[in-house]
Length: 148
Image 1 (cartoon, rainbow, N blue to C red):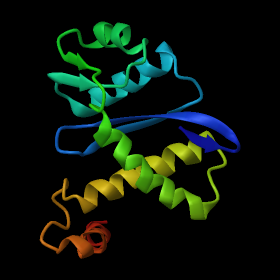
Image 2 (tube, one colour):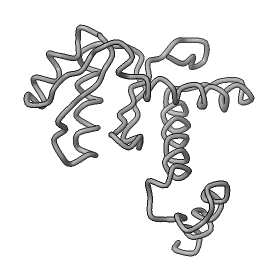
Image 3 (cartoon, one colour):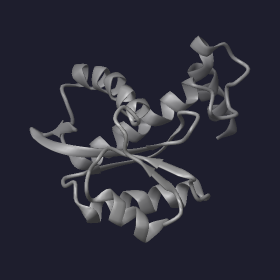
């Protein structure tokens, strides 16, 4: 959860087995409609059917997942979603100097942009991979600027 203009918002994040952030959604509510919208977007982005889906123990998720993709194993054990939760601290460290977020749209853009940079740093994209890890983002942006 993040505060957007003083109001708490829920952040849904999809991460694959290698730790790549696939999709991010900021929502005012944590209900079936928001979960359905998020899982639909994430599955459309992923373009494959997952074998396992790890979530927290929200009672909304099983019904939504059964409606969208009935075959994957829905994993809700304690500590199973630690890779997702661990990445929140880095984002919160980025947001503190910014003094928070003002609108849901800027929250969506900032959180998705942070996920993109994390994916670049971790080497999930082909751009900038020949550079050392500390220079990967700068090299990637240089390569992207040349391509544009």
